[in-house]
Length: 240
Ligand code: 5GP
Image (tube, rainbow, N blue to C red; front, side, top):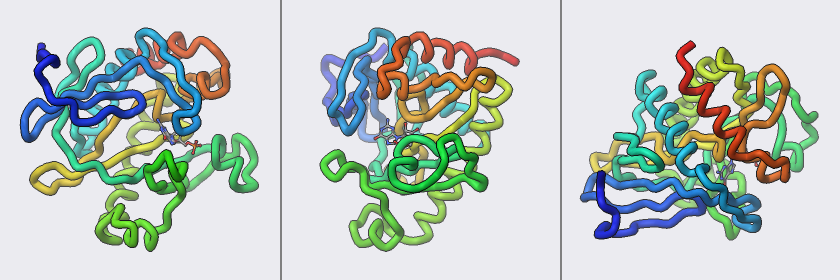
């Protein structure tokens, strides 16, 4: 087990802290903090960080097994990942299979409407500007991406993540409603899927009951946040 006391803190996000292990690797600590509304609403739920670390480890391994390169190296119980150090692009790449959340506040979709083909949306990662939606011209002009080809590659990888994740979750009784990805470049210039795939960054609905099993429980004050994350973990780790 790595001792974090002597490690340099590189970055503290809203739910994770990132420490430097060496020039190529980092230690990501998944904290129990929950935030919503660009940090306006905050709470702490015991065990949430560990649950997300374990769920995300399994789902990032699933991506690697399906040929999607990620920054993930190793899960360390209870709440840490060892990962490749990457230069994160300031993009939030969102993929939607069902209309809900901010989409309904911005466009006249019906709640629960199926989106087929899925919608991919890119946002500029900035709490100050509330992650505004980008088009390719804005992303390039801002320097958030370096070429149209890079943006196309990110969209293709995101669609593949969606297919793999949907097909993995449905037999486990979970509908993948939407999710947010982040990408980065490692020191050799390789584009990697980074950050996490967890109930903090995805919407998961119970395929039988339609119940919400993700961070919307916190956003909407539905209660039992950790209990539902536990259930997501149980289903994701189950051998079916
Ligand atoms: P929406 O745009 O509807 O709020 O979110 C769409 C999807 O992206 C949801 O699964 C949501 O959890 C995820 N998402 C969007 N922005 C963020 C963000 O800033 N942080 C996290 N953790 N997830 C986000």
